[in-house]
Amino acid sequence: MALRSLTLPPLSPVAATKKPAAVYAAVQSSTLSVYGSIRNCQTQEKPVVKRRSKKPTGIISPTPDTSSPLSPVPLKKVLVPIGFGTEEMEAVIMIDVLRRSGAHVTVASVEEQLEVEAAGGTRLVADAFISACSDQTFDLVALPGGMPGSARLRDCQVLRDITIKQAEAKRLYAAICAAPAVALLPWGLLKRKQVIPITTCHPAFMDKLPTFWSVKSNLQISGELTTSRGPGTCFEFSLSLVEQLFGDLVTEEIAATLLLNAADGNSRKEEFNEVSWSSGHPPQVLIPIANGCEEIEVVTIVDILRRAKANVVVASVEKSLKVLASSGTKIMADKAIGAAADSVHDLIILPSLLARQFQGGTLGVERLQRSRIVKKMLKEQQLSGRILGAICSSPTILHKQGLLKGKKATAHPSVMSMLDDAVSGVRVVIDGKVITGRGLATATDFGLAIVGKLFGSARARSVAEGLVFEYPR
Image (cartoon, rainbow, N blue to C red):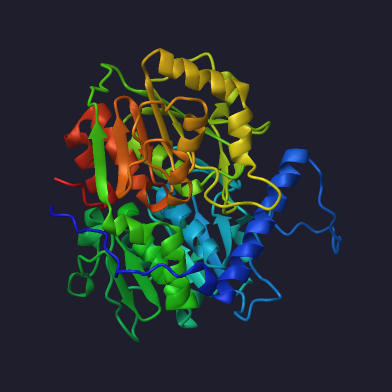
């Protein structure tokens, strides 16, 4: 089956001096709100709140409030439901991109608990139970896909009622991957009397859609409904939702921060001093995370490597296993970093913790740099001839520890000047047993490059096909 490329219209970065006021106010408010949440998490200080009622609302740890008295744009409310088996890449990319745009996103669990295990094993913590959202009005309801996640969403009566009401009120609603066929179709939203929307979905579910009204495109907008194909098309899908909520200018700004415009113009991968990475056993991979990590990178890399059948452990360097990522996504690590220290890992990957600057410090990156356990593990990894990886801002951590000496590398454009032998104009650089990447929207290329080195190009191409992502031939 031929795969379609994830493509976007050419985008020109918006000059810093011309940043839209609405975007600046929204992103600033969101960033400071997340920073405050992280500081409270680190110091275990309870924020002062006025108690209006002892009756529980069903919502805990509210998402960053992106409203701002300086912003002329009304607050946009978005609902992203999740359930057991939800596709984590789709959920997290939507959440991150929409929050960057200034939307107030509520992640709602359709399960009996807030902690939800996604399709690839990543554990996410929702902001609310879906029952707490039934009386609210949303500007957008966006369903991630995945299996059995899409079926769990379909079987939730509260979510069904919310989504049908959304469609009847002619407000925006969206679904990706399996969700259009598995959830929207049984709910009657693809065979409405007033209008039959043209839709798309993951290739594996296309035969479930009404034949005459389905198309094999990465993105399809039909009235208030937007549909898309899978994790590999989710950036395009999410930016389309941003455009419908906020307009072209905000969309271009967000695309630039995600390095989507850069991704279009850069070659995917360059390799120097080629050596074999195959180990003869299922690769053991460690990904340390801390408060402020980039959730898109963490979840994308973990999901792709697990799809390829690598054994991936996500380890928290915080006191708690629950980590608050840079856009407010709450991720549960598999274990504490101390518990992972005695194991041998074929590959250690550092995700970014500096893609967004928080007021008063850089938080997670400082936590990683100061962690004696992480420092020791990275040094031992190099001395034993095993593989090291870093993406976005984290190559600077390897650089500061002398682990990039004599190595070519790449990183986020904002920190490229800190590297001694940086390679520009490429998304992923491999030099011997060190791999580095630009980050954010290029995390898929980074993950697939690792799969190609560990398992071969056939496995990488197979994973890319499942993602609906074009793999270079």
